[in-house]
Image (cartoon, rainbow, N blue to C red):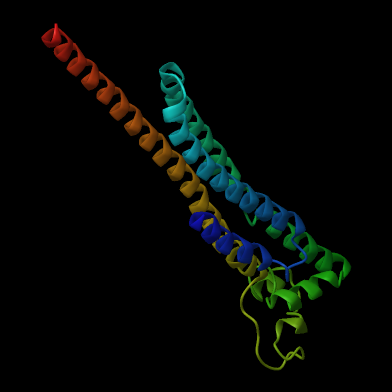
Length: 217
């Protein structure tokens, strides 16, 4: 329960921290999908640990032994799904494409939506003020803190702002995905250890009974 609470305390603030950035809806949707999936997986892992221990004492031996390779296969699939695929759904490439498209629209057609983006994200150009110069344009007044081209030039580019925004979220998702894999691996090792101990204890009792029975005769 403590693990679930800690996970929720990590994931929920990370999701709600994106509320102010309404322009990257598809990227935010991927973030929500990843975090909900990871949280659900951790909850299922907790249930799996309980079932593994219960299964050890209520089923026949062949089911217990068969459960070990199933746990191993499940661990491999979890690694493939979460670490290799799911966490990579969070990236800033789509957001940067979104920024570039609207910057080009502003340069070519005077689309003011780009200016709204700059003011909202507190940035200038794609890679900084030099982006305007690369396109042979004057740096827009929205790149200044006082909005009148006199002081406080913003030097950070919008691509850098987006990268900083999603980088921390991505790293947190990576850590949680690895935690899911580690938790399942611990379950596999724990269950296998219990199984080995149970089989060894049964063999030991069988030997003791074999020795005691002839003595009684």
